[in-house]
Length: 90
Image (cartoon, rainbow, N blue to C red; front, side, top):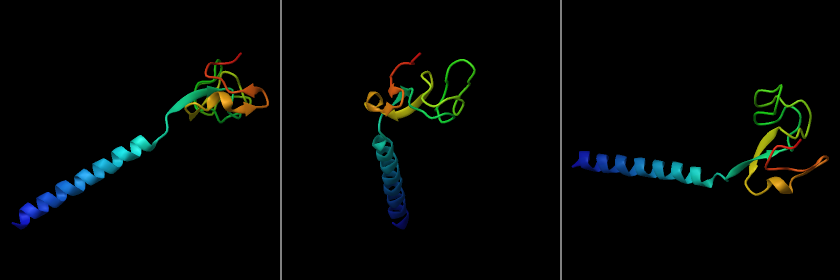
């Protein structure tokens, strides 16, 4: 009888852990690439010719360097060089 209770408790615990992990994944907001909003060396990845990936942008608000931002907010981010863009800027 105790083995049955222990097995049931273990199954219940695993179900709760799996459910909370799934809920945590759903809580993450959707993200999008936003060009021209990152500071020098703070981009998330590829920033055009001469750069390879994260942290390699040479100037702030570099038009071809992107940063991940919450989906739907990119074009509302104002910088000294204008607003963020969903496509690379020249």
